[in-house]
Length: 186
Length: 94
Image (cartoon, rainbow over all chains, first blue to last red; front, side):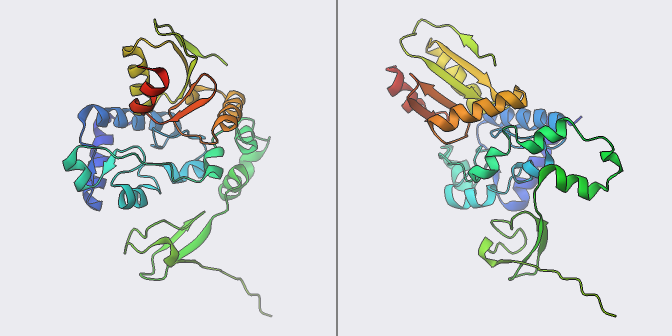
């Protein structure tokens, strides 16, 4: 089980890496960290405390803190959706902006009792014999692809490309899908 | 599906709060309503089972289309997304 202190250290280290700050209001910060800990204990990963998670990793992948939407939200509004992570200007002004939900509605909807979620609750008999990768795919129905950043070459295997390249900060438009083909000869 | 009821002296509006147990802004909304003695009912959606989550999805989508938390619905028609003191005060006449 993760302690609040571990959650705090992880968030602080991540903020430092990206040049962000944690929310300037101590009681809010404590609340965010507690929410993250609760979700990590409940789901096995620290999904966003301000969003409803499905409990299925592949569905919640984009809202595991720090979420996919943090970097574009901080770039546009100065803070992430929860307002756990903020930029220097917001940190110093102590005035938190309103940040609208950037997560697409289709992804939000996955948390509300989908057929895949129901399937997870009642797994089919003999399912443990299937290879892990296949089981994961069948359960969530999420189709992952290989994406590469045309600017720096960073490669990622996910449903969608990142909003901002974590390596060179290029925008999403710079990502292209790597289409792999297998050829059989002779 | 069980809503928790909080009684208050100010009960001239029907106030329903859709919340998450992990969400700080939802807690602040509850705190704000408590401090202002507003009668309301709330539900922590993350603690519900799949069938009830599906029902909540339908209810919220029907009213606003937005699935963000907290969502406060006043008199079945005014929908407030997020912890917005200004909007809550205006809608509740505080």
